[in-house]
Image 1 (cartoon, rainbow, N blue to C red):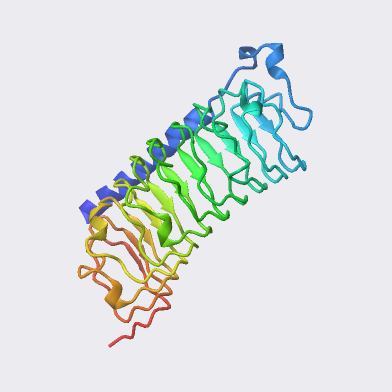
Image 2: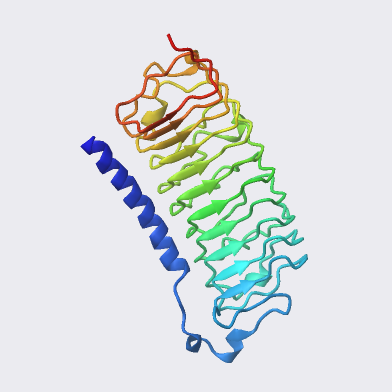
Length: 297
């Protein structure tokens, strides 16, 4: 029990440390006197709050193009527009950007000019949910800590896409069109600090190969996964939260040791095809097995 409590505290501490560091970097307050008069230029399509001079609000305006971004901007909100392209030019002076929200637009891979994103050397958060992407965009800035790509049409991950993203802690690819052939053994190479990987609601039949060793949260709900390879969890010895709800797991598809993994604290296996309770570890805190075919003896 003491070991479990210590591990829970450790997980909370690590997660909080990453989040706190990022929030501190992103929400650092600036004195208006730090900027000259020219710095306060505001694109006519957007709103620049005087009390928050590093933010630029351009959401819900029917924009088809990204306006020129002033050099003072750290936080850029462009969600829910009609934007199809991300060219380099609007970001020429935007060297301080930490946060870009481009959710709910019409952006395609062909519309992203090569270098438009990778030139943003201080970018931490990139939101591209609900667009028209068919592959993970590349190249991306090495500084990136969170990449949100949910609800696109992603079916491909070009080789080397993640090779330089050693600072990425969260990768969200849920609700896309990923098949097993989207992954190579080195697909996730380079993601040394990844903690959360979300690939729920895709079309996977197998567990993704060679996940980053520091992965703590793995979400694979709503796929068609039928089995888990022997010794699969040896590669991700820190995984604590594992979600495999709404798949096609059967007793014969589980490794001989089942889920007897000391790091797993929360295991979700609801809506599968199990007929018996799988082998688990004494450290497990939460086990979800509803809507299987398990019968009490």
